[in-house]
Amino acid sequence: MMNRNFVFHLSVAVVLLVGITGCEGQSESQQGTDERPNIIIVLLDDVGFADLGAYGSEVSMPNIDQLAANGVRFTNFHAAAACSPSRGMLLTGVDNHLVGMGNMIEIMADNQFDQPGYEGFMGYSVVTLPTLLRDAGYHTYMAGKWHLGKTKESIPAARGFERSISLMESGADNFEKKSYLPLYDTVHFYEDFEEVDLPDDFFSTDYYTDRLIEYIGKDRDDGKPFFAYLSLQAQHYPLQAPEEYIKKYDGVYDVGWDEIRAQRYARQVEMGLMPAGLSLPPIAAAPTWDSLSDEDRRLYAKRQAVYSGMLENVDANMGRLMTYLEEIGEAGNTVIVFMSDNGADNNEQEKIFPEWYAANFDLSYERMGLEGSYVNYGPGWAGASSTPLTLFKGAASEGGMRVPVIISGPGIRSGVDTDAFAFVTDITPTLLEVAGVTSPTGSYGGKEVHPVDGKSMLSFLRGDSDAVHGAGETVLYEMAGSAAVFRDGYKLIRNNPPFGDRQWRLYRPLQDPAEVNDLAKAEPGKVAEMLAAYERFADEVNLIEVPDDYDVMLQLQKNAERNQVEEVTDTVPILD
View (cartoon, rainbow, N blue to C red):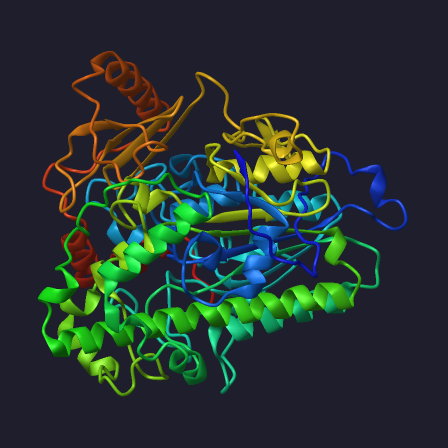
């Protein structure tokens, strides 16, 4: 843990942490004006460890810089390596297999379909954070991407949100109601229980922020606290932004991903976020910038300009939200947890489905990032986003799992950087403890439910303890064959092809964040000990390993061709 030397002047006091009571009893603070803090979780999509200005990026993000300056900035926080499993764990505190997200539905292996724990939507044996907060007297609001089920029993309105405007699928166009992937013929947006169309001037980040502010405003005079979940499509593909944001980065990325990566690492060292002297390995699956043709350099530089413009627009909307909290007098009584769901995405889907993308999007240079276009940024820029970590979204390596997280607010230390290990399942129990509420331990509302797996971070955030997870505690993760075991500063990992060989490797990520020094042969006892923990875990959560010949991109293509997504979601009636 380290105090940082640079200081941003924060005009808004943000980020507190809350918890709740179960339906069996409500807290005393519900009598009269409820002084419990509000809670806002802001979840970004596919944002790499080094993408935020507060983590070494060159992107202009003054509002998020301010948020970091007044809170605890985590440099060793881990989420699932992909979208829906991470979201399921975030909103329940329960392992993804027990949530029903043992794998993402889009890449579900043939042997996992229709198996317990692999339903592809958030199951009913878990209680969600918004349900608990709502039952404890909070207003509960959501705006943004859901990706945890689109049936009448599994949409946000059925899982604890009093008001919601939400995208059901894994992603969508940011300017219109349009699929981004041939897995979906169309996409669905629901306000509460009704499917809705989008306004003509829709841009996802602006719109979700507008609607969340609207929800908060309608109830703000009744004395009840609120929980708000702002789940942005940014930075999920397609990368798109209002043109004025893209233009700000014209020419910035002509130097290429190798140079930007080096610059970001240098800033991280200067900021005290990373150790000096690391030797960064080549970016996986990416050529060096200098080896590209002039035309490819021109195209890829524009792609990153779009990415950065989209990210700066996120910051502008964070500024709007923080200003609104000030205006209504709630800035000092609101918890904001700001984070990404997983690491940067290296995939270039248009190379897998070229005809579909050519038929559905304008792929020209001139329209990059604008309405009607489709842009991703590929493994080179994803490697820069992950600086100094290795690999990307989907991999159990640090680049897939270590994410930027900022938590700030009343009672929480400010101006603190920490390399203490924490995991996505720790968010829900933290919020529960702040409210003085005991989380469900086996039943809730007369139903049997899974107890919370995560551990509260509250005493750590307040400065009353030096770690979130103590000596000997083990945290485990698996999805699509990639797996990780964390214990006492060690990490045992296994990655699937194309970036792994399904062999277990042992690292110490704090000293070796790029995971280049495999300790498995030097410490076979440690490997055996951690592997035994994984095998127990696999049995406890009914883990179904993918077949030996499983290939994630081939499975994506196979599931698209079979339209398996619709078959799975049809197991419960879909809303009309």
